[in-house]
Image (cartoon, rainbow, N blue to C red; front, side, top):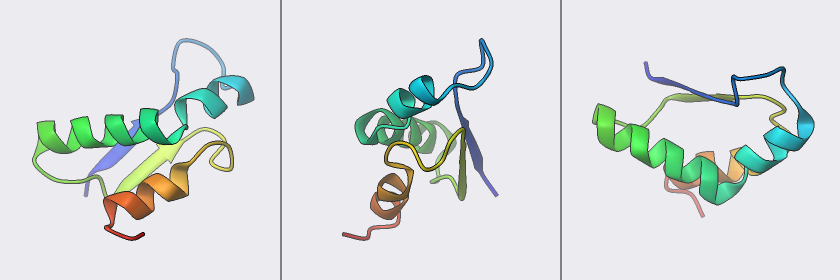
Length: 66
């Protein structure tokens, strides 16, 4: 099991920060970098405010879905 924790840790969770770091390009690049470093894709991606940004689209991309 490979869990990718993805959030800004230097302060309390915020919707503005989450909307930024949960954007498709930002989150996908992080997931792909972790995949390259660890040798396999994350099974789970943990984010703050999952409904903000493109988490589900990134997961679909990682799973090879359109």
